[in-house]
Image 1: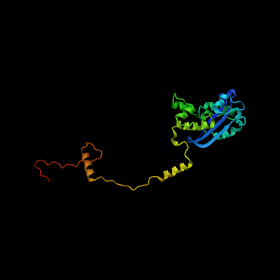
Image 2: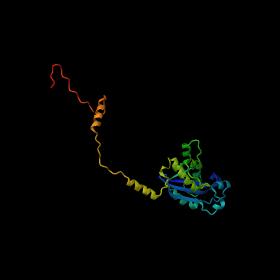
Image 3: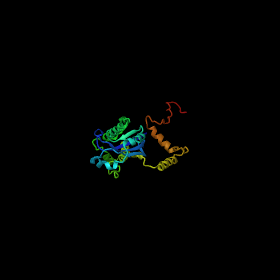
Image 4: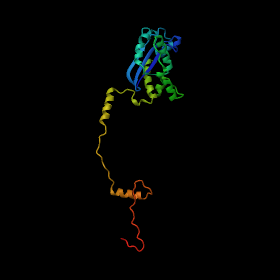
Length: 242
């Protein structure tokens, strides 16, 4: 099962107010585990980056002025996500910006039916608790040391770990095991398959049989079907015993 964890950075909150995408980051998952394949690009928004936005993601107008336009990267982006399910935190925000850019570039919009939003997942699992990405990383003890700014690729990688925790935990290993380790584990499992052993019998001793029979005789309806030996009939008066 292929899924794409996705995050974006923007110049503001509303594309209808002229704000644009400045970064897209994607992480590929197979069966909820990262494969190591990613998509990442910075984008020239063709406008200034407000200081409030730059303080969040660290991307300035000067830094972005020579980066590619969305129209130059849209084909590569769509090829990467394909028709896979998209995993996004607070998905409405990111999808709104992506669809605004896609429409302007002449491409079909992304449907919310293909999106898993981890924000309501977290709120349902931990009602009344903070559900932003930072808070969830702290809850699950996911290292935030490298997160000086909000970055689309880094946040996608963090969200991949959070998503796995929300799905039930890191018992799958989050894909951190190397291929060599996985192959070694498979060889080890194959080598310790149980060997077929010869059938062995453990007959009861005479003393055990005698003790068991004595115990069974005391039961009115014993389950073992052991019946006490029948006593010979009493001889009637005047009859001789054979």
